[in-house]
Image 1 (cartoon, helix red, strand yellow):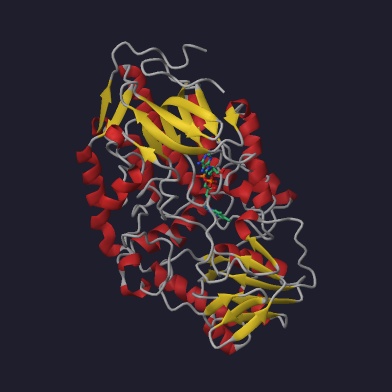
Image 2: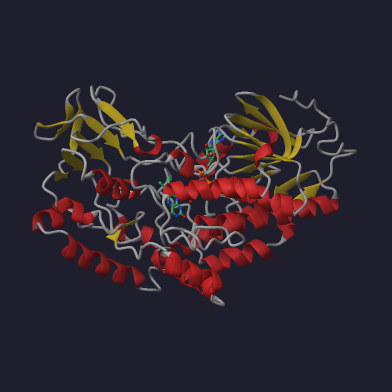
Length: 511
Ligand SMILES: Cc1cc2nc3c(=O)[nH]c(=O)nc-3n(C[C@H](O)[C@H](O)[C@H](O)COP(=O)(O)OP(=O)(O)OC[C@H]3O[C@@H](n4cnc5c(N)ncnc54)[C@H](O)[C@@H]3O)c2cc1C
């Protein structure tokens, strides 16, 4: 490990990227293309792929078509299915890293525990568990689904059987012939439940809020389809466009323009009809019926989840959980469900303290980002940068993600960041900071669009959605994807202040 930069000397690297998921990978490829190649990527885990490195539970897969869940510059026609599995996405990440020559610049098994801006040196000091790393610029690519969330249920540590979280699956865990309980019915449970139901003796699914579960147009992409995609003129582009439109119609447009485009109601009709077709028992069907609008929380997409509740060995428990005991889960009214294995499909810390930001970040004059957000509510200019925190950019800042494919977000935010960095190079600037005025203007614009968003309609009151933060805001970006794309290419560079440190030593010059 290189020793830290003393004030006034050059930083270790021009850019530090924190996180080696698709955001980090996308940022690194774009930096290389912009000939900003003195970067280091710092990753807590021992491999690349982020969400797809950590989440390996049975059934894990993408829930938008793979034609959209990939980089526009690295489109594949050899996905095995329309909705690729987690393992396939992990391989896609590995291939990108190798084909773009990124691996040697990634520091694995290194966790960033804090970051502080050195005002004199115009650089960031990253405190890692393997020593300090300094960089002129930092790109936060830590995602929001990195830290598994445990349920707030008394006794959850007292269970005497085996406890597993979907986000840290233990592949030695034997489920065959076991009594298994699953707490949670979010997107991970929708994939896990049908995958494990056939092998377990008894499966009890503990549901607090039913999920909207929609059918997915999935299927294998066999040799003939692959050939057509690869060889028919325009086939790849047409598939990509159809897929992008489908994604846009299933979340961003109905959620953010609920008052304008009545797509949500149509989606709900599809969901209800699917429930009627799939679930035999009317009582179970009723319990699986959401009482909130489609879009208030993340829906599930599965052709198997609902029908799993027709199986004789699967029970849907909707009575609230009172406690977890050594023997199993006890629900209100003293019913004990005895279990051998307890699976927590309880998702992640999202907008919680300690996750947003993922580690303490101190900007100008020691300004603490978490405290600043606590006092001012979550906000970031174009979802990328925050005043008072120069040279710091995020891929997923507040009001950055509109709910379409995550790859759309990555490419948009990386374009924004690279515009800033290229301009800094041209101006020989060593500090870039968004103005307070530009930030405030963007925040106001986002809040003004609330009237049309589904989240702020009465129908979302009982949704229990992780989209809501502790201020009661939903820091998703109320914009169609074309607008996010357009703005990243056109935002006014005068919204940033570019400053030059006197006689800066060039980054990496001591190497
Ligand atoms: C099960 C599951 C299914 C999903 N399905 C979809 C989908 O269908 N469509 C979609 O658009 N999105 C989906 N997502 C969201 C998914 O998170 C994004 O698509 C995308 O993978 C996020 O990439 P990322 O690189 O921003 O974050 P991540 O993939 O979460 O990667 C962040 C990386 O940062 C590392 N890190 C975190 N903190 C630190 C630290 N302090 N120091 C060093 N390293 C750190 C983590 O170890 C991780 O490797 C899904 C997520 C999950 C968990």
